[in-house]
Image 1: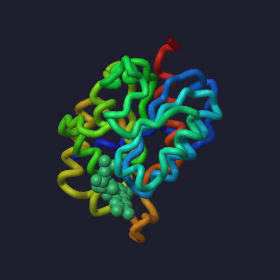
Image 2 (image 1 turned 180 degrees about the vertical axis):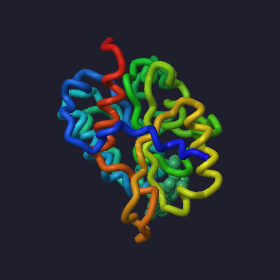
Image 3 (image 1 turned 45 degrees about the vertical axis):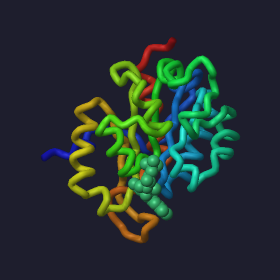
Length: 209
Ligand SMILES: Cc1cc2nc3c(=O)[nH]c(=O)nc-3n(C[C@H](O)[C@H](O)[C@H](O)COP(=O)(O)O)c2cc1C
């Protein structure tokens, strides 16, 4: 079987990119799941904001155990979505308006659990709920998996990756190398530069509103 991730990352993803022309004024949703790599996502949000993107952050309950929502609120200068039940916009109880105005979505880190939820169409946390309302034929959704090498190679994960690719999700990474669990192997989240290049690439492919 061909690896569904092999052709997903842009060719020169790790190279220096000038972000601003690609992301300025774009609405970017960054979803954070519960993995150690969540700390790297703070850099991604900061860089996008510095480049003039309009960044909204959504976090799973597990993600809030790794990085405080306040960090992302400060970096994005916007409220952080941490629950389906806290409404930032009273007119948008299902986050439909947010989903409709997005140019690009990045899920980083995307956990094994989140891959499983997305592959089975769940919408029972704020991240999967917002993503359930995103039309991927119009708005690219980039998943940046991050997990232990054994989790990455589980048959369930491989099945979910195949399903997600068929369902129109795109992937950035993962890479291979040192993991927080002190193993070395595949499943390490892509570095911020590569994630930023993928977001810039995805935004660049969309007409400006
Ligand atoms: C210290 C610690 C580190 C973890 N790191 C990861 C990880 O890197 N990748 C992953 O898929 N799960 C990891 N997990 C497990 C997830 O946090 C767990 O599956 C959780 O249910 C994920 O929820 P979410 O997908 O809603 O964020 C870790 C758990 C702990 C306690």
